[in-house]
Amino acid sequence: MLGLVANNFIRVYHPVEMNSSGTCSSSSKNLTGSITNLKIEAALLAINHSFIVDNYKCGPQLEKLNVKGAIAQKYRGAVGTTGSTGYIKNYEYDDKFRTNEPPEFTSPEKTAWVLGREIVE
Image 1 (cartoon, rainbow, N blue to C red):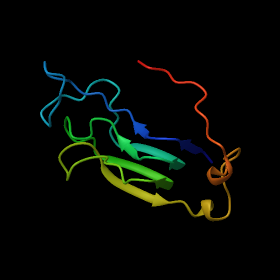
Image 2: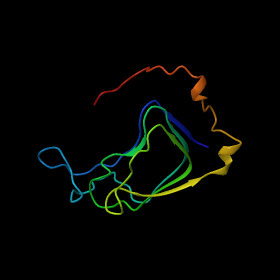
Image 3: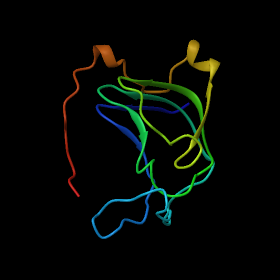
Image 4: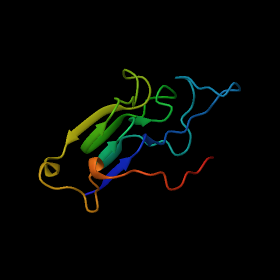
């Protein structure tokens, strides 16, 4: 079992070709690192924001985003547009999370979250 807890966003990496103004479109190319039919098996918790896909409005469709587990987020995040860019959702709740939790998975309501380190790129 895998559990991921983020204070803000849980982001799926999706690199795309940007134009000269630093923006992208549905006609942009997906770059190396873009994964089609991505599979994630985990409990995902975005405390203050969302589970999202970077550049979900850009490039050709990446087929399915397969998540088996659980997703909890404050705001519903976008992972694609209606069948033309990003991913098509294929989410399946994993019943084992009803009675078990991932090892070392902290209880978010009992934890005092503190930013320990931030890397700015």
